Each structure stands twice: as structure tokens, then as C-alpha cells.
Amino acid sequence: MPKGYWIVRVDVTDPERYKAYLAANAQPLKKYGAHFLVRGGRFENPEGSSRTRNAVIEFPSYQAALDCWRSSEYQEAIKLRQPVSTGDLIIIEGYDGPQPS
Image (tube, rainbow, N blue to C red; front, side, top):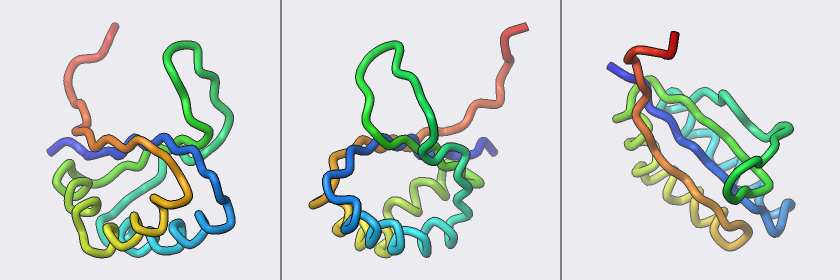
């Protein structure tokens, strides 16, 4: 079963209030087996648009990634994030097929 991923890009307008969202999202992320592969850090944007914060979060399955986002716990956390940030979040299934050789 392929893993699931959240790809997140966010601009934060109030870093102090955003901390409440980070605290609130910890429980549902842990509950659904999330693992941060990317969380902030240096980046370049050679094509397209960007936001100031970026994250890639791995879940044990695509279904777990969906279930986490849909959970009542995460939906409560979103209410803390939305007034203090603008972002994009996609949930995507991992790929286990052939790779370039």
C-alpha cells in the first residue's frame, strides 16, 4: 500500500497566534502516524510561485493522510490556522513504480 503525503505551503501573518495551530495539530498528526520529511528549511523557487513556509508530511497510507485531515481534531486545529495564515495543502498518494535509470 503506497504511503500518503501532505504537501503544504503557507504564508503566516501572525507567527505568535500560529503557534496555537502548531500545538493543536500535534495530536491528530501523531494519532494518524505523521512523519515530517520537510518542515521549513532553506529552499529556492526556480519556477512558479512560492510561500514562506513549506512542509512535506508522510503518513503510513493515503487513507491515513485523508483521515487525519478529515478528523474532528484536525478540523478544530484548522480554525486556529485560517485567521493567521494563507496556504495550500494537497493530499497525495505515494508512488512505488519505476524510477529513472
